[in-house]
Image 1 (tube, helix red, strand yellow):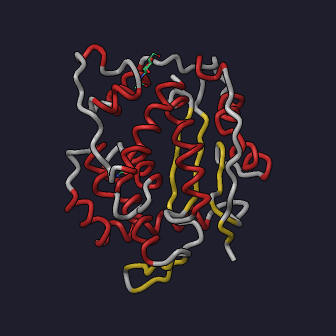
Image 2 (tube, helix red, strand yellow):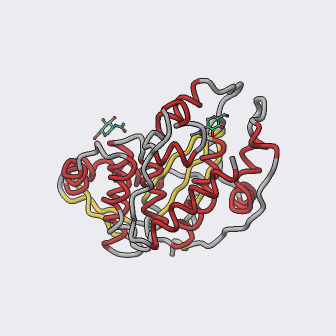
Length: 257
Ligand SMILES: *[C@@H]1O[C@H](CO)[C@@H](O)[C@H](O)[C@H]1NC(C)=O
Ligand SMILES: *[C@@H]1O[C@H](CO)[C@@H](O)[C@H](O)[C@H]1NC(C)=O
C-alpha cells in the first residue's frame, strides 16, 4: 500500500515535470483495476475503487473528522495538503473524513445581494479558492483534483488539466459558471461563515480541526504525523494501514494579521 502511494505521488510529480501528461493507459482486465491505487488511477476508476473499498470496509466506529481551513496559494497550506493530508486520506479513507474550507485569511464585504472577496495572496488566490469551492460542490472527485492543483507549479493553470484527469465528465463551462456566478459567491460566503465561526478563532493557516476541535496540541500532532494522529484517535478496530507510522514534519504558517 505504501509502495502504491509512492507510485501515485511519483506519477504526479513526473506528470508535473512533463506539463501534466495524462497517466499511462490502462491495459489491465477489470478484475485488477482496484488492486492498487496506481492501477485505479491509470484505469480512471479511483473513485469507484475507493467507494467499493469503503462499503466493504470494516469500519466499526465513527470516522475521525479532519477539517482543513486554508488558502489556495499559501505555501504552508499547499505543503500540508499535498504532503500530509492527501497521502493520509489515501491510506486511511476508511476511518477518516476530510473537509476542506478554502478561505483562510480572506475578507468579505457585502455588496448588494453578493459579497466581494479580498484574499491574502491576491486575486489569483481568490480564484483558486473559488475553483476549489465549486469543484467540491460539483464533483466527488474534488479532493484528488485539488491535490493535483496544489501539487502543480501553477495552481490556477493546472485546474482544467487536473479536472479532466480525475473527472473527465465534469463540464468545465458549468464549473466556470459557478466560479464566476452567484452560486460560487454564495458557496464562498458559507466558507467565510465557517471560518469566522471557528472557536478559538484561527490565527494562521493551515488551521486544522479534528472532530471539530482545534488545540495547539492537535495542530502540532497533525502537522507532525496526521497519519499517527488519525490512527490513534480512531476508536474502532484499527485498519491494517495503522500498523506503521510515518514521521515527517510539515509546518509553515501564513499568519492572519
Ligand atoms: C482496495 O482494498 C484492497 C484490499 O484492502 C487494497 O489492496 C487496494 O489497494 C484498495 N484499493 C484502493 C484503490 O484503495
Ligand atoms: C451545491 O450548492 C448548492 C447551493 O448553491 C447546495 O444547495 C447543494 O447542496 C450543494 N451540493 C453539494 C453536493 O455540495
